[in-house]
Length: 332
Image (cartoon, rainbow, N blue to C red; front, side, top):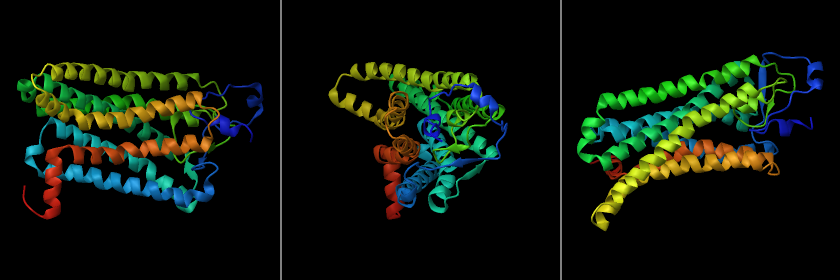
């Protein structure tokens, strides 16, 4: 099909034409075909090597963070509880993508059941948004710790932290729930081929031979209502944090206080900047090769789960010290 590459680019909506009405409608196709990296099928085994390394680092790093926080009583505080939530989110997100990706790259197992595709779609969208919500919660923790240090322990108590975590989970879980239901309701008659190794909402519904504006508008609503609001909240929090830091009397105090936010800032930038680049690429990069779109998107999905534990492990003194103790077999 000459139209297929264009029709499967994320962010492009296909018009419903009269020619589509003469095509047999498959309301629920049995399977979708995941191409992996289109045009680079011969190199799939080699491409899988860095992705395997990224996944292994993500699994090892996030489990290490969870183990260190659990076994070290001095780390039982709001910042580290949020870090554990982030680690669990990264583990679920990367694991929902990698096994099927590996089966495509290694065994050319490209078929995915329609229901399995919708389930994977839900997990990807839900836990990506959950990661953004946890970053917002971490920004709140840094704001209280720097702007109201004497009240930090009374404001962010364990029950409050638990309620914030539950609110993030419920918000993302409920707002991502319509994605698979919207995708299931459309008739599919163009093709069942997806030029990527995973299922995303807009990529799937772009295969439908119907007016999918509801799906498109809902996707934009979720992006603005979750990640958009999270970004605004983070920016406002850091404006207040920077004002408090610059009001400190000495340069050493400002540097030391800012250092407590550095890990959080690094992981935020690693999450949001590539996401912005991908959005601009899909919107304005129509002349960019499809395989570059897909490859960059794959790297982006695995980068935060891999980088987050590395950044926090290296930049957070308490975690780094405990990690060194584990390696040299000494007590804390």
